[in-house]
Length: 150
Image (cartoon, rainbow, N blue to C red; front, side, top):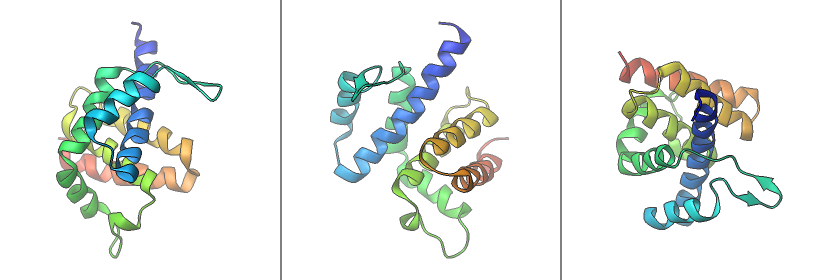
């Protein structure tokens, strides 16, 4: 796999991880069922005439499983970084999953450079939101990175 195709596969895995965690949050889908559904029906598949990129499956599994396993710790870190008076419950549900995935990568994936993790989730935010929200993702993840990366 070339560096470029690996990068695209990881980008696709990040986007899919956000979508999977959103589904888990909204529908309370069990983790094993959720991973299986994405493996069988989403990653690299064509859905409603949209061809989904091939995602790096192991990376996708790690992010989704890691966020699920460490959600309380991740949410605590995110809560510290929100402006006074803001809670995670006030955030858009997709935004929350983007921030959780980015925080997980910054905390647990030392193999991913800090700038790469932040930039990738800012790019994911652009898929769902306007520039203002993407800047919010950048600011929160940058603040988290200062705490969890040396």
